[in-house]
Length: 366
Image: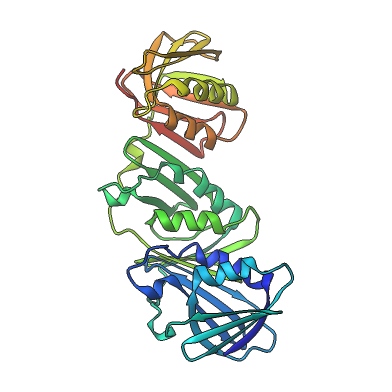
């Protein structure tokens, strides 16, 4: 096997697939990238048995064959070579020789037959969507996913297809993020899948803010997202996601409208003096006024007061400041609305006039 390629042509595909490779692997082959050279070009594949990434790039006059190379070392070599460098890669038995000008590197290979292949999937649903649309859905919800929760189904993102809508929902039990977008997806019944955290993070990294379409295939155990150059496959979490509709407050009677950036900065400054473990702040509501307060075990205090559009009775309620800040960062538009019922109820946060994205934060005991 032999191929010649420019440094820039192979570096980007290598960086994309290497994001899947874990630094510590139980199987040595999982530290390697599968290199498949054929008349169609060069295909690079990496997997951690949960997520698989495959990127294609064209080649001139390749000599076909397959091998696997240590992903990190190969990428570091390519990165360290000067711009515009041309690489000549030759594989003979269990050694690969990489030459570029007067540089020469010899890497150990592992048999390509050992490289795991995610089973072929039979799609139950296929649709196309603009990359930017799917990326924004993920960006506006993924921060609410749980991290290493024993309720494993919370360590991922629910993707729900139905009613000509695509919905993304994430929750860690203390907060919930919901976002939807219209799409002309034809399906007889709702399809629900849970994408694991790593798959979500890789997808967010791969997708671009463009109107270019990606093909999405949903199977019983996998999801696959494809462009002309790239094929991303992730296993799904097998579990029952909570009924998120029950969590979203339906008729909260107190409405606060604020400038989003003013509120975000007030919460951010106040959170400097919160208890590092609980990150709790207090919101004190009065007509046309909102106070944000915090204190910590060192008896230090912070207080911010901002003008808001509110005409209801006085109310005091506590929240985790990080959850409020994450929701405010995800909301688009200049103004934000907070909807409450009482000091023990959830807070619903959304952009004024934007009902497509909703954020729910549970209160904390004061």
